[in-house]
Amino acid sequence: MDNQKGLFGEFGGSFVPDALAEVLENIAEEFEKAKNDEEFNKELNYYLKYYVGRPSPLYLASNITRKLGGAKIYLKREDLNHTGAHKINNTLGQALLAKRMGLKRVIAETGAGQHGVATATAAALFGMDCVIYMGSKDAKKQPLNVYRMELLGAKVILVESGEKDLKAAVDVALGDLVQNYKNTFYILGSAVGPYPYPSMVKHFQRVISKEIVEQAMEIEGKTPDYIIACVGGGSNAIGAFADFIGNPDAKLIGVEPGGIGIKTGLHAAPLTEGKISLIHGYKTYVMLDDAGEIKISHSIASGLNYPGVGPEHSYLKDAKLAEYVSITDFEALHAFKKLSKHEGIIPAIESAHALAYAMKIAPTLSKDTMIVVNLSGRGDKDTDTILASEKESVRLQEIINN
Image (cartoon, rainbow, N blue to C red):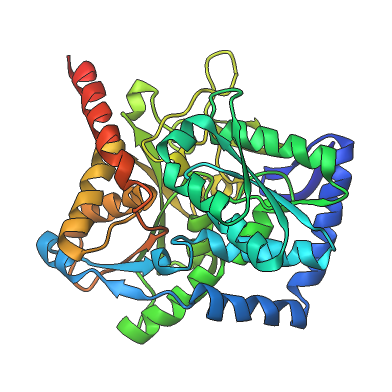
C-alpha cells in the first residue's frame, strides 16, 4: 500500500502490505493522541529525569580542544544515560505508548545491541514480554550486549538469513509484527521504516536538541556553530538536529560510515553514494548495485551498518538543510583511541565517527567556534572486539594499498 502520510519532501511514506498498513495507522493515531496528552508526557518526563538521568551533560572536551587548536569541541554526553546510549529516550516513549494501547509484548531489532538493551530495559520496567532480533554476525561482535538483553529478561533470536546483520534483523522483526500485531508493539530503534516510525522516533529523541539549545546558551551564550552526529539509520542525529533545522546559525553535519573507503564500495554511506529507492516500506537514499538491488553494506560499527537511512535525512540533504560526509573505519578508530587516552571517555565506535570529523575540522576554525558532537553511546560494548576489528581493517587497507 502506498500511503502518502509521513512524507519529508519526496521521502518517507508507507509502502507496505494492506495488513501492515492498518496496524501502522492504528499506531499513528495512538501516537498523535499520546504526544499531546498531558498525563502521557508527565509520565515520560518522570522516567527521563529519574530513571534515565536526564538532562545529559554538555561537556567541553578541553584536552582534545587544546591539542587540536581551533574550535571548542563539546560532547553531548548521551553515553551517560542509563543503559549507556541515546536509545533509551525512544524505547521508553514507545514502551509507554504500547502500555497505553494495552499491548503486553514488545519486539525490536538491534545492530550493535544498544537498542536491544534499551528495549529490554523498558520491557523489564513495565512488565512486558520482550523479543529482540539480532543478526548473528552482529551478535558475535557484541556478546556482552546479548548477555545484557537476556539478563534483563528478553528472548534474543539470532537472525541467520540474508547478511545476518541489522537489515536482516529488521526484515524478520517486521514479519513478526504482521503475524502478531494483535498483542505486539514493534519498538523500532532508528528514524527509519514506514510512517509513523520516523516521526515518532524523532519526537522521542528531540529531547537531545532541546537540551543542547538550553545548555549552549547557558555555557557559551549562543547557538552552537556546528552540530555533528553519526548517521546509520539516523536516530541520534535527527534528535540532535531537530531544534536547529532551518537555523542559519547552526551548521548540521551528519557523518556516515565510510568503511574501508567510498571508492572500494565497502561502506555504509547511502547519502554519500546512494540512489533514491524503497527499503523496509519507505522511500529514501539506498545503496544499490548496477542491477538496482540493495548492496551489502560494511562498517566497523554494527549500529551504523545499514544500506539505507532515515527519510528525513534524505530530505535534509536534498534541501541543503544539513551536510552529510563520511569517515572511514580507520579514522573512527583513531578518534576512539584519542578520546579515550586524552579525555578518559571511551566512546561507542559509532559516535567516534562523528568525533573524527569534528577533530578533522576543528583546527581549521577559529577559537570562538563552538562544535557540539553528539556522543551517542559509550564504548565498553566495543572493547572486546575493537582489537580484532582494527587488525582486520589494517589487513584490508594493506590489500587495497597493494
